[in-house]
Length: 290
Image (cartoon, rainbow, N blue to C red; front, side, top):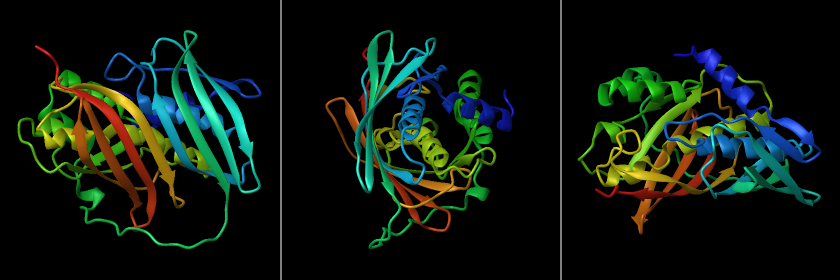
């Protein structure tokens, strides 16, 4: 099992793309719990590619993405960036991720120069103090077979992610309110580059967002094999500055599931109550056929 700081270094290396041409980048891949590239990795790498074609004074404020095909963890991914618009306040980029000659992922991202404006936000919900919650290494072995727990701990080793309540794979067969909370931060300090913090939050945002769909039906999810699924699309809005190496509350809920799809929506708050990010994701959520 890798040390936490080694795992974070490895993740940062994974997100540090090679520039092939002015607007073409290449990233390495690694396998996830399922035999395809983790969706959060592709989204984060695509955002890195977009951000490297944008002036430093323009910060990411939104992204909208579609997962088109499963990524091959054994092959690199090429990211082609289109410079859609460079306005006086906003910059727009489109990124297509390609493997084996086919697009596997599509991202549109918008960046904005800082400006003052009207300011209000939703109130942060009640949540337990993250320092009082068990770590993943303490939680996972209680509910999952050792091999699966070890793989999940290794896959998330760069991130300190703590569930505020019992995770889906800990309450199989017990439907409950479709709501889930986790606290997360990176296992180690990051540089002050604002894009890096946005990219790390994007990476983590794909880890647990559909948990609330599973909770509504008493399903344990991909880790226990009582559903099969994959991310379909993902959208994020970055409202206020934050650091991904400091505690962030990921407050998630599912308003609907139907037709083999489930919808998750969430808000991410800083520890002192500032609304930093809004997230929406839809994914395939199917019960396996006998």
